[in-house]
Length: 115
Image 1: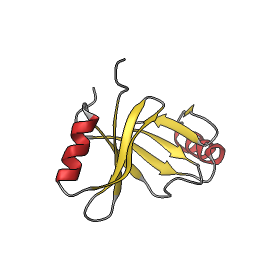
Image 2: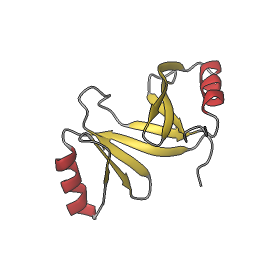
Image 3: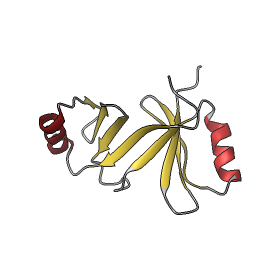
């Protein structure tokens, strides 16, 4: 069960999804779900993924969960966070990215809205 405001996912940079999948598969027996040529997701205690897209941030990205994404965005802004990527769609839901007062980039995601 997803818990509002808790760490829910971790994205890590990779040079190549093939290389990183081979390493974690061989070292720890991890399995992956590919989402395009530059993204491989894992569920190994903590859900996460390796991102090999050259245009993305090359640092770990902690991702929190929010039942109400717009309310979470308002709370982050009110608390002094800086929005660096407004709410956008991705396979599986929506999310936004922000920087905390120390300059760390995090994201918050939510399931897709019912239509």
